[in-house]
Image (cartoon, rainbow, N blue to C red):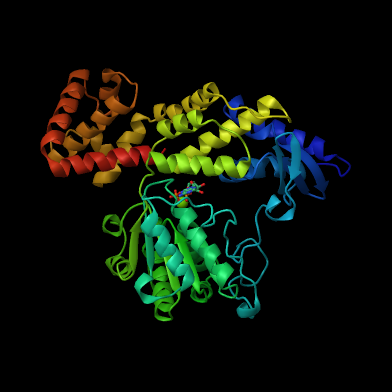
Length: 479
Ligand code: ADP
Ligand code: MG
């Protein structure tokens, strides 16, 4: 444990050492951690300065566990990390003051924590007077959400809901779309807008996985299921993100069902996101699926080229940096399916330019863009493993993974094996022999034959083609 007289720099250096030891490569360390500078230490609270708002978002989204681990090792269990955004624009230095410049990790949550001594965390005296933290990220506004054909309907219905939450025709709102296409951003924007227009409304954003954990805690450890239900039933606007995670979880679904009914009947707004449309939510109870259809279902589609450019330009503008149109177009042409990936490339480039140029000026060249894309985008593509493919295929067809090795000649199993072989051949760099061994212990000729069959059926059978396309999407999305 750290002795009190340590300076913030010493403390941060120790954290950095732990972080470096736990990262797989120096690139990540150099890009994301090295540019952060310690500026203050008060008790167990360390404040570091980061070069841009995206920086802390990226750190929080990707390295929060590692950061917490390092901080706790050095500062003890009460350690907290605060960020200050320190942006250098065209030679002059701007330190963003207070909100949103200082971001406090772990804002107080109105959620139960089974480790606290508190009697029952869901019993909140005088909830009406109490401020419930809506768990919204102040950057995910409508203003920052670039409008385009891919999201116009979803966006305008979101705005309509914010004008008039709880209106029957838009309740519930069900937003679906692939990973990184803006679902979370959109529903957060709705939450923020409602809070802005109606500050007294109780709004809560919660990830389905957290809701599920709380339900289990409430039920098993604390035996306070009623308080859990009451808590959620007090919301005016309840946003649950990634609701597909309720699939197969009967208990959670039935608690959610009760909450849904209560809120819907009282004219309270419900908003959900999912990575697939309601018809494909196979592990969800029919009575829930029916209710999802009561309101409005909207899709977020993959961004087209112009949208990708517009999103990049917005980020460039927000960060106050310069990037040539040539580079913007290059990135937009290479990173095509996922806005999160697009942001990742942008942020890495930005970070690298600061890292290279020190404090004065930031230059982003096309070579840097190529390197970052190669590293971030192409390398993740290379990382698809045969195992991942096998799992995704078996998952998709509802088969257990061992069945791939069984001797059975049942058509559905043979076909699953062939599809897995086909993807292994097209999405990994493994040899045919290796693929054969990994998928069912076959030889390379069998693999070749399988690929040929998949291609043939793909050309002639529409349903089969849909299966293959969906599986491919899932393999890519799961990276
Ligand atoms: P999802 O929840 O669908 O996986 P997110 O909402 O997390 O995706 O979006 C991924 C990233 O892309 C976020 O940082 C988000 O702010 C950004 N983003 C998504 N859609 C847009 C948009 N239309 N305009 C600007 N940024 C966007
Ligand atoms: Mg999301």
